Structure formats: C-alpha cells, structure tokens
Length: 197
Length: 353
Image (cartoon, rainbow over all chains, first blue to last red; front, side, top):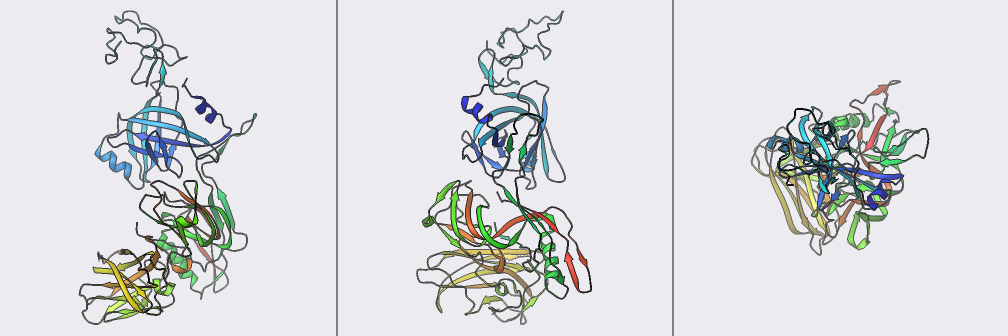
C-alpha cells in the first residue's frame, strides 16, 4: 500500500473535500495541467487549469494496468507539442490533491507514475493520452523507492512477490534462478541488469 | 488579448419565471445504501446557471434583428458571451478571469456598476488603496462606440462622409462607414469636442477600434485639459479586406488631463470606403471591448497581481456573467401577427483561465 503521511491520511479522510488532479507529461519541456479553475503548485512546479477527464487511476500497480486521460485541447497546445516530440514511453506523473472545503492550500495525497503508450486526437478537440504500467513512487521491499517499471520484480509492502508477473512460480527447465527476496537483483539476474545489488 | 466581447441584447428581457442558479459542475456526492454521505468537488467555485424564457417582442421593435445579429456573432455555443442580469443585488463571490499574469493590471469585473466591493487576490483581501474600481469598461456612448442609433458624438475625420451601416458589423447590427471624397489618405472618425469622454488625471487609458478593409489603420488617443490638447499616443496596423482587425494603444494621462479624444482612421491613400466599429476608451490596460450600455465594471490594480493569481470579489450590482449556451440552435416563434418569442435558452457561466 502507499505510504502516506499523517497529513495526507487526514486529508484523504475528510468526509467533504475538494479534489484536484494534476498531470505532468514528461516531455523535454514538461506539460503540466490540472483540473478545476485555479492553478496548483506541486513541489516547485505549477500546473495550469485545463479541462481534464479521466477514468479510474490504479494506485496498486500491476504492470498490465492501463487507463487514459483526456485533455481538452481546443487551443492545440498539446497537439502541437505532440507533433514535435513523441509522447510514447514518456513518464506521465499523476497527482491527486485534496483540501478541506474553504481551505487555501492543497495536500498532495497520491502520486502515481505512468508511461505513455499512445496519444489520439479527436475532431472535437480532445487529446487522449493512453497510459500503462502504473506504479507509485513508494517504498518497496528492499527499502527502495521506485516505480513498477523500474523495479519490475520488487513487490510493494504487503504485496506478494511475483516473478515474471505470475507470482512466485518458478517454471521447471528455466535456468534462471528466482530473484532474491526483497526485490534486490543479483548480478546474475539478466532481466534487471541496471539495478546494482 | 484584444477581443470584442458580445453581450446578449439588453432589450431582450427574461420573462417572469426565468431561472437563475448556481451549479458546481464537478460536485460528486456518494449515495450508498448505508453510512454517511461524502462529497467531493472538482471545481473551486460555484458558477452561475440560467434557464431563461423571454418576453414577447413586437416585430417592429429592433430587438429581433439585434438578437439574430447577436446569435450570428457568437456562433451560438461556439463562443462565450456576456449575460446581464436584470436585478441588482449583493454577490458574495464574483470570480474574475483570466488569472493574473504579473503584468496585466486591469480586469473585467462580472458586474455592472459594481459597488461596495471587497476584493481578494488568491484569497488575500486587498485594501482599497491597492486598486481602483471603475464603474464601466467603456467610456464612450453606444452611438460613439458602434453607431448604435446613429453617430451622435462622433464626426468625420479627414475629407470623407460618415454614415451608419448595418453590414459589416463586428458586434451588434451597426457600424460606421467612412467613404472618402475621391482618393484620400487619413480618413475615418473622431470624437466630437463635446463627445470626448471624461477621464481621471494621471491614470492609464486604452483606446480601441476594429477596422474592415485592406489598408493601414491607426487608432489614436489624445489627452485634453479641457479644450487644450495634450500628449497623444497611437498604434498602426495593416487591415484586411475580409476580416476585422483590432488595434489598441495605451498611455497614461498627464497630471492635469481630464478628457480623451479618440480617432480611428485609415492612413494610406485610397478611394475605398471602410468600415469601423467597436470603438472604445477603456480604463487601464484593458483590451476587451464591450458595448458601453452593457459594459461591466473594471478593476485596475496599482501593481499587477502576481502570475497565476485568481481575483475574486464581493460586490453589489447587476451581475454580468460570461456564459455559453448549451446547444447549437436557438429559435423563436411567431404568434399573433407582429409578435415573436425567442425560445428559452439554458446558459452556464464560464470562467476564463
């Protein structure tokens, strides 16, 4: 499960609150937009208000998960950026912010990192970003913080260890050893060579 | 961004029973079989909604062509427009658009002749010393601004004839036509001496105009101290035969200036008639044109609100909301000979970001 601070938990537990979704598309010059009418700051970055639709955003992280975020793009800002730079495989960060009704400040409660699979543009000005591989930046077994795509075999706390996305099953005849518990990759693990042991 | 703002014709009045409301388009309330209800809102502000029916319009009145012209200019749901409420009251939260950008100082207040105001910038209350609330965003009269009902208050500039025409129009159903005598340069319209709007010394003002016709066009303002001319300021742009070109210029009045003269003209030599419309003298650095009789108030800050700041205020006056209609066709019906009734319209407030 995501690791949340007391302030984040308190914000999420409010029975009546205002919510805001902020999305960053990790292009060379990141595109940052949020729902609602007013801009919002996440970290040091500002997100500009824009009409955004989205369906369910998974906060657990099976690598198969996918979703779409739809932006209003009648001003062609996103489409022009898309023409000049491919969005596919770019990181897309999604933040959920909440605040008590009447408060001034937003609390970032969840951040989920996705990858962009593809983009589409409709004739009525919608810019659709298809996403896959949700993974929160949250502690994983082995005390590492990272995404599902970075730590493909590392379970989140409370999540079963999985191997090649089929749990811990180790197929007979496979010469590769199973990964070490806790998500570390050993030097012989050729599936994940970029992570040091 | 320079823009001509269209306002729903003031003469087409809502009938008794028209609906005024507030809505929160992002509001979600859980409705399960058990447990408490929770709410989640995805908008920061409740916004205005309207469902208006309209009073009968005798066909001889000017409102029907005005209504049709308005619907044409706004392309129905394609463009937002401004709707003036008929009743004055105190509004606890008027949301001003667009967001501050760190350089712009003047913003349209969604209220006519706003008064008794309390101003907030990003939630922080501003002292009255930090802003000026102007009653209206266009200091001309309707006749001066767009030849509505005639050209009173304007006169020809240069050697030409001045008339009111019904096409082409940048807003409403009229505009100025200036026809040069033979081939001329520097022909257009200017305010009469008596028609110069009164201004406040040492304050910033913007002159604005829209031009139709190929050629070079000038919008020029000149400050006056009573009848004595002072500094002038202008901007020049090349116009187009098939679209309206908006030109504006901004300057600060001198310490003793109390009048402003506006001149809009074509500067290059031609024998072609030109159309001029949507003239304006705006407080501050505003570049949004409104018909003067329905021009909402303007708030001018002493220093520009910070980038991304949202301005809200409580004020008393007739609310003037920036809205869109919810459908792409509007119709009206003929009843007994001579009367028509526009069908009802549903409209939703839209805040500029």
